[in-house]
Image 1 (tube, one colour):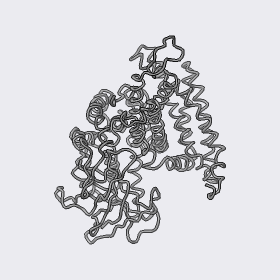
Image 2 (cartoon, one colour):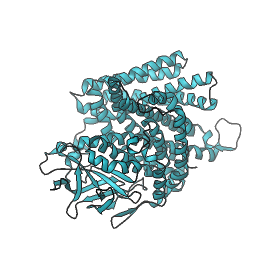
Image 3 (cartoon, one colour):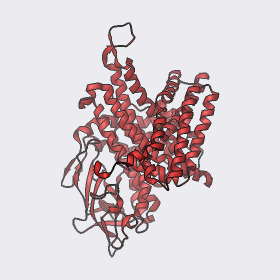
Image 4 (cartoon, rainbow, N blue to C red):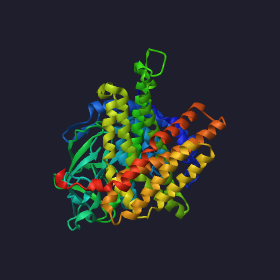
Length: 594
């Protein structure tokens, strides 16, 4: 079985939970409506299912080849990218001023989920391009925007993010790459960057690198980092491509997964210095790069969700086909398909429920992003911006940690055959593992959540969202869905208690709070995911009562929400215990005892 876009659930979440109608009412989205969204999803599904999905295994097996500084991508990738570009997919969420379609982030996210679910390695190239465009559009000069954005918008040129170096890891204060001013107003960039996704490839005409480097007089630490545009090929005054810049891929990493995506070690300035242009003001580069990183973090959360959906689909397909052992409690002695066995169903339901909760919460976050950027009322826009800020580390980290869990469950459903590469189940597990690491590890996301997004604002946004959870609990009780309401109410109490703990203790005991930050993020993910599943249950019950739509779909939606409440939400109790009382044990052991 190959990937099939989950269009029914996407439509449900877009229209019933994320509020597509509200988003379409925002300024600039006048032409957006559910019918247009549906048409876009249908066309995207064709590319995902018929072009990208068949290349997923090809990319894994063939990887990329490096010779004389040139990277050749896996067979079929270049042609697939040409189709992707020529059909205008790169410009879906880009403004019409740059030749894009100006679609809401909400619709674009649903489309991007398909790219990531069908072929995660392929999807990383447009993900980084969109992030690079975001940084240039917000912070670069008008001249740089005019030079680079139109070609990047159409996908003829791609973009990268060059942050870390061999000695730095996530600590960008240790960046050593240099930028020396030249007489013509440009800079000469030198140094080495590692882990550069699609830093070199053969799918586009040019590659636009965004590079962090230090000026000669820069202060130490993160306050002394500047951001530069460094193209692979220099751009002539008429927009045509000129000479090759002094930037080169010197090796590609041999990785656990995402073999179809070239992860490059890039060398700048081996022959006198790569020519670069300063973005914005000197020594403010890290702040500018965070514009790109925040966009990428939401994108990686979508990636984790998309890959988890693919792993779930593969596990379901195998469970239907694999016949082994009689069904417990059945009078029929014949072996049954393993989907009839209780523990296999437990695993499949866990995978299904987590994916549905992630999709609902992620799309809600992206609708919030649309409101934050488009709402005409400044106070409303500010409110939604805070919501996006709070949800971004949760979407990134909860989705990606779940991706590894779900892919691992997929291997387990396959049994021994899951450990054999030919079945394809193992690829999802190998590919998923990186998503919880890059663009900020789970620990970094959790510290962002407890520090900047909770303690710094005294828990205002957290408590506002939890107030929405409480409203939904009342609606569930009124609708007779007492089981879901009760489970969600317990999770709500634990979320409120741990949020209060973070706010009260962070300033005086930051290490203790940090020790429980990942469990706190997990708890919030489960609680807010459970909130969305509760909302889904309300819609499903109403649709069933009104005989409106696909009866089997809504019955399954209601059943899955009940499973989430009964089987997954109770985990918030143990997570709360860890957050509130587990820090001392984390920090007690002396360093030399490890």
